[in-house]
Image 1 (tube, protein in one colour):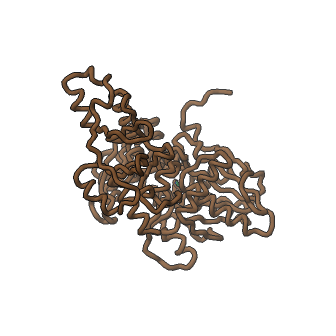
Image 2 (cartoon, rainbow, N blue to C red; image 1 turned 120 degrees about the vertical axis):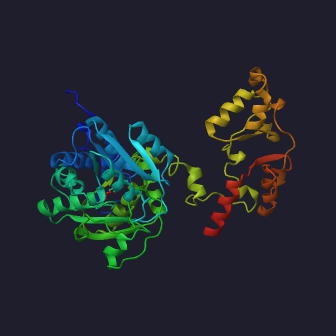
Length: 456
Ligand SMILES: Cc1ncc(COP(=O)(O)O)c(C=O)c1O
């Protein structure tokens, strides 16, 4: 084994794995692990080809600046390949994107400019318009524009397609792909059309996207909303060759997230939310076949990017994707029930330093104080602050000395609307049943409950 010269050499040549624990009907289903790329996604591939394409054409010169409008995986690929090649990288991102993505981009050395997400193309603060303008105004800068850049789909004609064909021993019937920019589907589809035209390109699209309905009916609908990240569009992809598509499946968020979680639980493969969309469509396709077929789909990015969302049961419950046991009382509003040992608490004899550490660790500003299953107090950040302000030694004093004991307890059968005045007065309603403590209801718990009720 010789050592690699850089992380860029580790892009591509991703492994192919057969799924053997899922019901794939008459088919054999394989997934290509694009999450194994160094930046954690399939987009590393296009980061290299688009940067090298710009170098060859002379649009990007040594010491130049790369500008792109994206917050997602393409930004991460560009930032890490760009840093390695000595370019400055400016990423313009809309303000609805997660803090983790901004941290990741900044940690890679990119300059990140956050702009409005609520303005359409043509508005000066729209993220694509802004990126284009910055590139025009910055000497030596080049706007990558993945949505209209042919070096995007070329990456998949030159690399992804041939890798799949070789890994499948030239024996393949269908490839299932999603569309963000349509680079993957167009590139792999064009390669297969040339080398193995019998291979069907199957398109998996999130419900709410306008691309799938357009392919199915020719109608141009206004896009709705979906939670799956990286695929689904509100306009047709300029570089997309949609004529390559043999069959289209629309997949709901619920089915996507279920499929991705099942892939992890049964096969040990941790993909992102779009992996679920692709897998759900691939399984539907497989189960519909009356002849044995060999089918490939992708794990386009890593589930590690979504740990706090789709792999967090509480997020899944808040979004209404996991149904909990319902009691018909205030227990239905408590996000983390004490009986499930899902909440964060302290005991009256715990030290203030323990309470402080627990608040920081779990990012909560208050903790119920529980003694033998009963609620005896609540301690919040201000209580700790007031206790230790003049004397740091007090961090090693017990919680009982600083906790508040004027509690607002409510019985299980309280009407949710009666919680409002309590929250309004700055108290947190503590749900009790005789002497037994069940949990607390915060303002966001009440909001989540009302939203779930409206959806059901
Ligand atoms: C997270 C993610 N990003 C990107 C893509 C591919 O998008 P593109 O059409 O831009 O090649 C996919 C495809 O499934 C995806 O799941």
